Image (cartoon, rainbow, N blue to C red; front, top):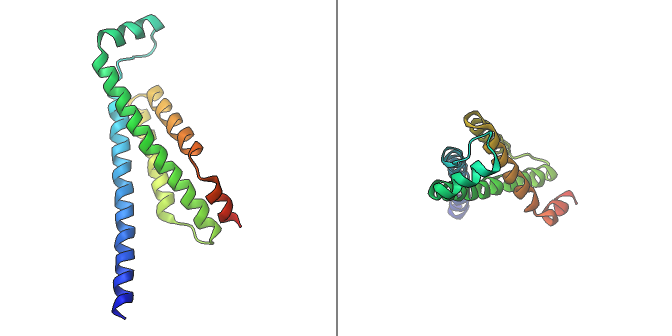
Length: 147
């Protein structure tokens, strides 16, 4: 009897830690997106020569913004990929994980807040995250969940 309680308690605590980890990823992805938008030295509208001059004259903010962009879009792509996979797998089993749906909603909400700061860098950030998240989906897992 004690083993059942301990194993269910461990499973419950493991589930909590998984969602805490995903919330921390969500927060880090938002912060990286915000840093990318703030640090990028390119302001619109610009010509190509203005952009090149700005990058050559101040390379540190450009490199920092690209690093924040890279880290942020990888984190958000992972959240999108895991959310879609969990939603499809859980829907195939007959029960939908509401927390996964809520987490995907928060990812989309973070992109909305980033677009309030600056639209076009946020659109680029969202497009890269969405495309990479969809490319990295495990289609074998999705196919098995339908069967």
